[in-house]
Image (cartoon, one colour):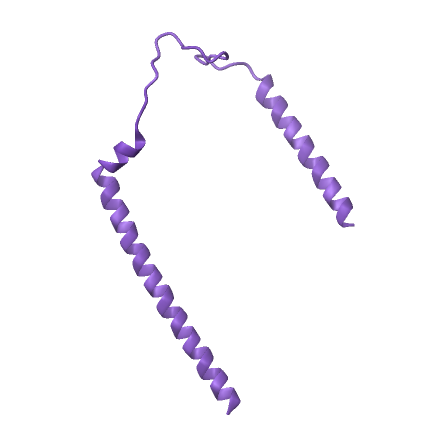
Length: 98
């Protein structure tokens, strides 16, 4: 039964990939796109160094610090609740043994 299910899924997924492949490559090229990787007239390529942008971006720094603080608080809360649960389990298991 497991082999039949696996075979059916493989056939379905293969058909889905074939349909998506056909739909992707059968459409008309969009206006302004270049199939051979050349340059479109009137357009320029712009390179952005994202790591430098983020390093010098104040909002990014502030948000990152806020998220790190929130992460620290949530981890502490989770650890506290985990310890509390372990204490309760220990208490009840000790109570059951008596």
